[in-house]
Length: 138
Image 1 (spheres, helix red, strand yellow):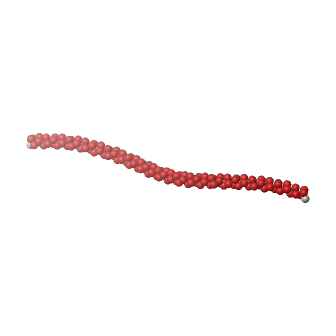
Image 2 (tube, one colour):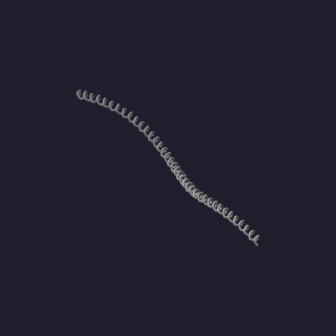
């Protein structure tokens, strides 16, 4: 019986050592699990932050795209306005040239009419002189 008790005590001591070893192993595993959970929580926070940053970058990119589109639209409008303005300027320059030509023609006509007027006045003066001569002779 003593042998059996000794044997049982040895078995009990062995089991207690295994129990301690398992408890230590369990504690290490729990610490490892806790470290993994902490790391997982940290990575989830990091993931959430990166997703927010990605959303912000995507929003910013969309705003930039819209802004670029608006700028392109304004550029096309400005180019159309420039083209219309250039056409208007060309038309105005053509009209100015035609008006200058018309003014020159009118000035020539006016000069010609002044010449005729002077001729007529000279003729009128001569005729008046003739009339006076004829009246004096009469």
